[in-house]
Each structure stands twice: as C-alpha cells, then as structure tokens.
Length: 213
Image 1 (cartoon, rainbow, N blue to C red):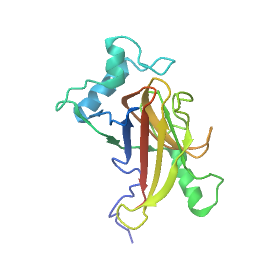
Image 2: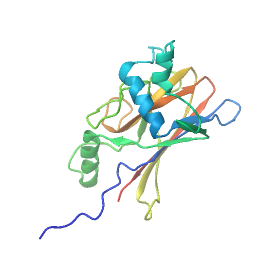
Image 3: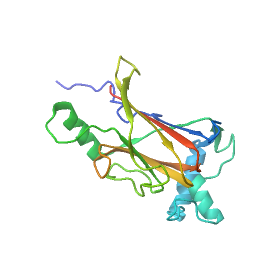
Image 4: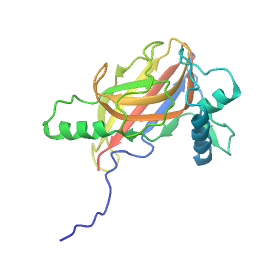
C-alpha cells in the first residue's frame, strides 16, 4: 500500500535566522533586507563580480563591487530597512547526516552549538562543508552559542542558538553558519546575504532556529 506524503519536515525552516545590529551607544542600526527583485539583482551582480570583499573583510572600491556586496537598495522597490533581518538557512548534506547521528548515537558528531560568520559571497549549496571565508578576528571569531529549545508548533520542537558578537574592527559580513566545533567541525547550515557592515563597538546578535516537524 502506498503512503501519501501529507507534509514535509521543516528542518530547513523558512525565515529562521535573525540578525540584529546595535551600535556602541545601544542604538539599533537598521539593516536592509531584499525582496524577490532585490535578491535577483544581488545574485546577478555576484555572477559578474564573485568576490567583492577584500582580504580585510571590507568591500572593495568601485560601483560593481558595491553592487555585488549590497545589491540595489531601493526602499519599497528592492527591499526595505528594518530593525532586524530575518532570512532562511540552507541545511547541508553533511549537516543532515550529523543530525541523524545525533538522534540515535550511531555516529560521532558532536552537538551543533557554534555560530560562525564570514565574508564569502558564493551562494550556499547543500554540498558546502565550511564557510567560504570565515572571519577569525575583530571580535567575530566562531563562538559557542547559547542553546535552548523553544516552541514553534508544539512544545520544545525548535532548537535555538543565540549569540552576540562584540565587534572590535570593521567588516562587511556576508555569510553565517552553524557548526559543531570551535574549529573545523561539521557544517550543519549556511546562508549568504547582502553585506551587514559592522564597526568597532557594534554588537551583532544572531538567533538561529531549527523547527523539527
């Protein structure tokens, strides 16, 4: 007898990662979030300029580099500024295997409790095993996040990670990921986005949620 699928697991939950940026005086710094049109423009720009970020983690000079880092930020047309950016992740192949291991203990994967950020701009794909260009300085090195369970649809059905980076330099952050070790480790999920500019004194809070249905 054939069993009809009535739903799909939401481990790769839509709109499950939140970024909030605060300056040294405690003021929230608005972040631009692209709509569908803005996302298309950003991807197209990165096709022609795949590496708009320099070795220092900041945007190279030139209009095309700026376009490839930020897209075309036209409020109400290509997106909007808001007090936070909420976007979706991509769960990797190795990440799925790691979660299966955690469920029944048949593998060696440790818990996925570390968040890293970087300046890579190549689109996230399921075959990723690392961040493209992980940041290891300026207060933005990979850290162990605060782990908890929260409720999305049923009690405690969502794994949540929260961390706040205290920035001590100037960077254009364009990627983030969840891993299971302070260095190397298995990459559970990755996402790439238009640059979030941070400077010394800023606090960048990242909240990542995985809803298990």
